[in-house]
Image 1 (cartoon, one colour):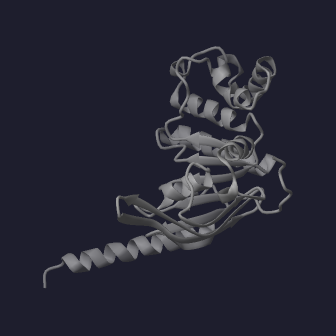
Image 2 (tube, rainbow, N blue to C red):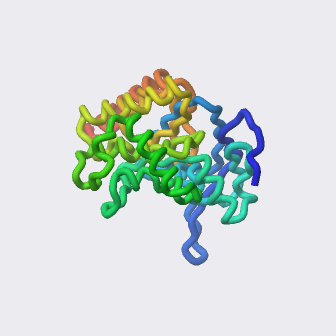
Image 3 (cartoon, rainbow, N blue to C red):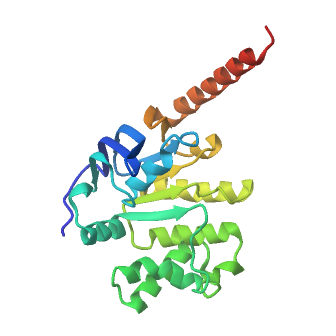
Length: 258
């Protein structure tokens, strides 16, 4: 399968998603329109139940819409076979998770090389590229250690190296600082910001923390399965703060004695 040329990296059109239990339908996304260009850095925010995890799974080709269209790097995802979808995901996406998702019994080097091995890159070449990627995140001396011999911040840097080793156009980072302290979270976000600024790496970040979302260029806020805001991050966070203050004032007024 060849990759069509496209100036749009991601495009969702009228995406809806429901889950079914027998005949009972639970709608989660109610018609999402979203477009992302190469080099963008997007933060997705929303309260629990807003649909942000479902949206992230669709963007990562881990789930499919109930209706609507999902295009990734010029391909209509809905129309791909399972094998074609796996190939597109491996070439196009790099994943960074809150829980790191490193394999405990493999060395750091082999964890980073894993996406290349899945892509049938010869083992020696895969390990060579993995070693070069570890150097870029400052972990050359840790290549032969096990993940449990590293700090949380170091493990997340390994996860970033693994996400980048196949040179994917898009990184999806799902709460990447959720298990880290404040100082380490800052280091990880600075690393992602440098990737975006210096290499033009496209990033979609899911977070519930405004200070983490502030590193992005653009903010998408979800509420009840719909896009509430999509625009510059500074204006979006200011709107979020106003909404939070208004909701707090309403709750206080409702709880006051008559």
